Structure formats: C-alpha cells, structure tokens
Image (cartoon, rainbow, N blue to C red; front, side, top):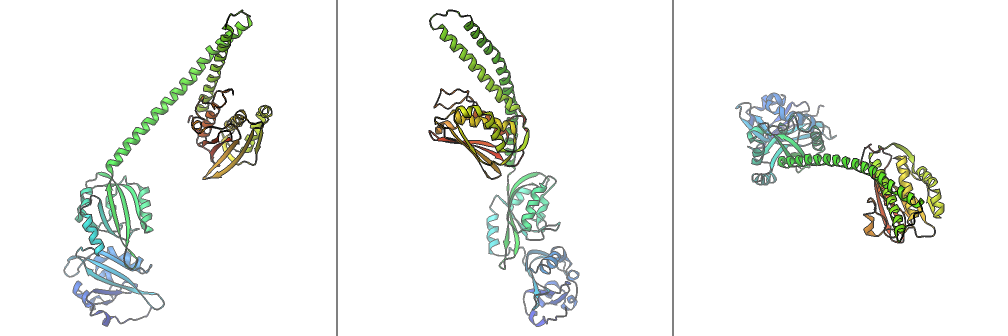
Length: 500
C-alpha cells in the first residue's frame, strides 16, 4: 500500500515516547522522547525492523504486534513490559500501548506504540488498592498480563503478594516476568488445566482446584479463582488469580474417602454374610416347620379324642407352622432376588401388563376387577422380574379394595431421562404414617387384618426397581386409593449387579 502519512510535526513535541511501524514492523516514525529514552537517533531507527533496534521487546511483543493488533485489530495495554535500553544496557519496565492505525477503508496501515517507564508502579488506583489489600491477606494473589494464552510461555506475572511467597517459596524476583505455569508439575491434572485454558481463551472467570508445586518441589493443593480485567476501551489487559491453600482440607477429605470406602467394603461383606445367613437359616427353619405341620395332620387323621381345648390348640399349632413356612419362603424369595443377575431386554411395557393380566385372570374375575391401560413405552428391563412386579401391584390393588368393582388404571409419563409407570387404584389406601413403612419386609396394611399375606409384595417390588437403578414411590389417600409409581431409566441398560 502506497499511502504516505507525514508524522513529523505531529510527534516531535510529544513528551510521551512514541513510534509507528508499518505492517512489516518497520519503523516509520520515531519522536524525540523516544530518542531520549532509548539513546537511538531517529535517522538510525527509521525503516529498521523494531526488533533490530529494540531486541529485548521480541519475546513479549512479537505475539501482540502480529496477532492481537495486525490480525485482530485490538488495542493492547501491556503493563510491566521489560525492556533493555540499547545504549546503556539498563533494564527498565514500561507500560506500553499498541494501537492499530487504519485508513479510510478501515485497512490497517500499521501500529502506533507508546511507552511510559513505570518502575513497577501498578497501572491505576484500582490496582493500587488491590495491592494494599493483598499485602495483608492470607490468600496468595498473582496479577499477570492477559496474553499470550496459547503460547508455551503463557501470560507473564507482573505482581505477587507476600502470601504467595509464603505459600510457594518463590520470591517476587523468582516469578516476575515468568508464567504461573512454573507452579505446575507432573501430577497437576491435565484435565483441569485444559478446563482452565478453555476459560482463559474465552475470557471467562475460572474456579477450580489444582495440585501445584513449591519452589522446593513439595506438592500442595490450591483452590483457585481467576478473573479477567478490562481497560477503559473494554479490552482485557490482566488476569487476577487468588489462591487458597487447601492441602489440609484435601488430606482430610482423602482420609474420609478412604474410611468411607473401607466402611462400604465392610458393609458389603457383612451384607453378603447376612444374606448367606438368611438363606441357610430360612432353609434350615423350613424343615422343622414342615415336620410340625406333618405331625399335626397325622394326629388329625388318627381321630384321637382330644379333651377340652386341645383340638383348638392343635389348630393353632398347624397355623403357626404354616405361617413359619410362608415366612421362610418369603425370606428365600428376597435372598434369591438379591443374588439374581439382571437379564436385560427391550420390551414394550404393555406386553408385560398383558402377560400379568393373563396370569391373574382368576383373581381378576373373582374380584370383579377392572384393569385399564393404554399404550405404554418401550423399556430396558429384566422381563421376568418386571412381570413379577406388575403382578404384585395389580394383585395388591385387587386384594386391598373395599369397592364392589376394584379399578386399576395403568399409564406412563416421561421426563428427565426416566419413564414413570403409574399403577393407580381405588382401594383402601394408606395413612401418611404407613406409606414410609409400606416397603419394609413383613409390613402389612393395618386397615384390614383379615386379608391373607406376609407383607412381602411391596418389598420385592422395591428390590426389583432398585436393581434397575430406579425408584418406586406411593401417593395415597385413605378410602380413596393409591398410586404406585415405578421410575425407570429410559432406553438404558442398567449395570448388572449381584446384589443391591
């Protein structure tokens, strides 16, 4: 581009150091303040590559010149930029501003650069107040330049407070001009660092926990908050990071996790032992109960003339023996269910209901029950176990009804990745206090004690649903009816388990 601008009269009387470069980073203007600051005459500087004249700027500024200003047309405020004066070799820090220069068609003609020596003075009153607070806090505070994020070096540290030195062992002289990545090491989470980098690239605040390393190589955990800071033009200029040492907290949590895992293992072992004990106890109890019942029947066949209430006592003995055998059968069902592996298949739930109604045909006719259902969704379940559940719930709805026509309505709803199968009846219902106990083993509805049963049906239903990684709930109102809801993962196969 051949556009020519006369900069001389405009720049010579400025007190602020200023120079202008074309898109090739060749110097096109160099004012008197810049000559005084650098010791390089304008005649020498003009048309020279900026990094040939001021080589110490290359490491920090090359990215900003070529990427941020020329490609992205951003105004950059760079605080605490390190510069070595070519003539004297003196190391100074400057506040630098890089501004894209445009023509009438908005094409970028070059970059205008202003420099102001700052001697490590923070940019404005905001940072000055922050420094005053940070000196007395126990949290480590770092302030870095905003960029570059994607380069290996990372944004440069321009400030750290005393708490940072106490926490890490690094003095300001150790870290100023370096990247915070010097705190990271072999065990620092790559996944968490990737999340951090994603936040920085999006100019978003970040909160997380990281494993860092002190100057001496010791590991420590920090809870880290990082926020971006904008300048008056709305461009991001800095990151402020606040770090809290949570090593002790992490160690306590790890110990608690170890204790919990140990407790879980012990509970699992004891549960398995209790299941085995229940199985063998039930198996051993059934035989003597069967013997008692058999001998009672033999006595009845002998037509022995029993005096007084002896015959009635014999009846009670027989009932007790039969009750023990029924309870033993119930225990065995629960134990076998706990040990059963799921056989998952995808099936429409209405097929399960149709099979359950066919199996319960005699009870439905005898109870004059009316069962209504429509189209039900496809689910991934163990068909046999879910058939057992459906039969239990339908049979209970018929059994615990005081209506001339027991009505059972079965329907489904969906949401949050789950399908809900509802079994609604018009039975005797539950009182609020009884609902929580309804799923407990051998708990029965107290409203009608004449109804036969062992109080195991709902317990089995709950076990079946839990093995499918779901849950079962009851909503009920006395004399109105109950709705049992079976909540199952939608179109997902649950993990197989030996026991739940």
